[in-house]
Structures are given as C-alpha cells and as structure tokens.
Length: 375
Ligand SMILES: Nc1ncnc2c1ncn2[C@@H]1O[C@H](COP(=O)(O)OP(=O)(O)OP(=O)(O)O)[C@@H](O)[C@H]1O
Ligand SMILES: [Mg+2]
Image (cartoon, rainbow, N blue to C red; front, side, top):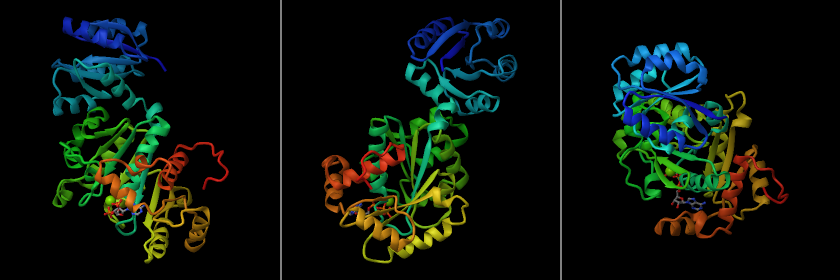
C-alpha cells in the first residue's frame, strides 16, 4: 500500500525540510503540503491523503485534531512537535492521533512510525511467544537468545525480546548489556509511549533483534504492575514480527499474564534426571483449562541426549503430549559462547545445538518442511 502523505507545517523552513525527508522516504508520497491548517482542511480532500502529518506546536491542536478527523475520517494522523513532551503527546493520542513524532524526523523514524500503526501489516505478522518453565534452570533464557537470532536471520523480520523475569532476569547479562532503560522505565512511562517511542527502550543486540531488559534489582519488581506489563506487550506486539517473552519460573501473575497474551506458550524443561516429566505434566494440567490449549501450548526439552528422533518419541510417550523441539546438552558450548560474548548458535553453526535451534525457528516461521528426516 502506498502511503499518501499530506504535510501541515506552520514553520516555512521546517516545511521545506520535512518535505524533502518525505520525498526521500521509500513507500510514501507527499501529495499535498500546507502551512495553514485551515487551508488543509478546506483543500486537502482532493489529494486523498491517507496519512496526515499535523503540526502540533499549536495551542489549538486538540480542536484541530477533532476537525481533521471529521474531514479525513479514514486518514491516520501523526502529530509532529519540536519537542517530545509526555503530556502533549498523550493529549494528541487521546484526541485520535496515531502517534507523536519529534521533528525534524528522519526517513527511518517516519517509516517506523507508519509501520507501528499500519495494523494490517504489523498485526498480521506479529507472533507472541512466551517461554515458561515449571521450575528454574530449564535453559530457556539461552534458548530464547539463540532462537531470536535464528528467527531474525531466517525470516529477515524484526524480533523483540522482553525480559519479564522480573526479579532475576538475566538477558542483559547474557548479551553483556548495561541498558539505560529497562522494563521498569517502560512501565513507568507506558501511558505516554507510542510504539515508536517504546522502541527506544529496547536495546538492539544484532540486526533486527532488540531487547527490553529486565529490572536491575529484584526489589524493582514492584515497579512493574501486571496492567503495565500487559500494556507494554500489547504495544510491543505491533512493533515486531516476533515477540519472545522470558518469564519467571512457575505459575505467577507475570507468567500467567504473558501466557494469556501469547499466541504460543512453550513449556521448557531441562532433562536433569529429576522430576522434569512430572513438572511438565502438572503444568500441562493447568494449561488444559484453555479450550485451545493443544494448539497454544507446546513443549521443548533441553539437554536431551542423544538428541535424536528416538529420544523425542520416547519423551512424547512418557509425557503423553507432543514435543515441539529438543535441544541437546550444550553446556560447554553455551559456557564458551558466554565467555567470549557470542551466541552458542554461532560458535559452531553445524552443531546439533544450532541445527535444533534453527529447526525450531523454521517451525515458527512456518517453513514448508521438505527435509523429511527433520524432527
Ligand atoms: N542446552 C543446554 N544444555 C546444557 N546446559 C545448558 C543448556 N542451555 C542452558 N544451559 C545451562 O543451564 C543453565 C541455565 O540456563 P538458562 O539460564 O538459559 O536457564 P533458565 O531456565 O533461563 O534459568 P533461570 O531459571 O535461572 O532463569 C546455565 O548454566 C546454562 O549455561
Ligand atoms: Mg532465565
């Protein structure tokens, strides 16, 4: 879909500057531009804009928004302002603007903004995946990090990770990050955020992969309420094609909220010769209250040796439920990767670990399976 933009900008120099940014942005066309909002309201309709960039540095902006929505009911309105200010951004969004962009913006920012509300585009592709473990130390953080990389590379689409293991999340350690902003700041600011501004709370770690890191201290868990967490997930799912959520072990308000909001919940357990099978079965019993649990709940076993189809089938029989994926014992690889700041996936791309992670990514992307011996 081509985006036909009408630009309304009171400042002449800014009008020129923004016009040239729009003209240099792929997938959008500048169909009309006005310095006076009144002129745009009177004459703009003949240009059939489907996006209106409206100068919000105007004391009358809320009334103007109402008028623009009345005259252009099918167009999306983006407010633009010289400074981002939580209060005015929120007022504009409440009055019907899709988002608030600080000007002058770049082509990338404009495209990100449009993508964030083109629901036909984002919603159709967004896939929210929660990784749940009955008990801790299941290998799920390792799996999420490696799977995110594989998903981004194979699909070419954007992948977001939310570390919602609110007390002891270690995704930031995993990627050796010292984030400025975390889920705590995002939850604090959630009422003033739009998908475009929430993006800056995510830390990019690779091409097309970024992370909203967990709390810096366990006591900060109180700063992330469940409604705030839910609002962040809702917003983030419009920003990424795949959203992977790491949650604390066991059933708790965070893991339940994340699972409820997900398209797929993976129960992840590490085979350690303990009671993992019983834990999976007990967790499944709880998820069975969902009417469609068989399509929404999948299991992944880690540290499976030998990591082959026979082991997978044996485990399916013991558990009494299909096993979506198996990951081999990769302790040495995972530790070596952590030591030199790499992903285990990359240390040895031909390893069984890499193959199994890539296979899971393929399944998520829904590749046609032509390798008949893959499992
Ligand atoms: N496939 C694997 N094989 C063997 N060891 C693994 C594997 N994946 C992860 N580990 C090791 O298991 C430990 C736990 O891994 P990880 O932190 O990924 O699990 P987790 O379920 O997220 O744990 P937590 O409950 O602490 O969040 C780490 O020491 C990690 O190196
Ligand atoms: Mg973890």
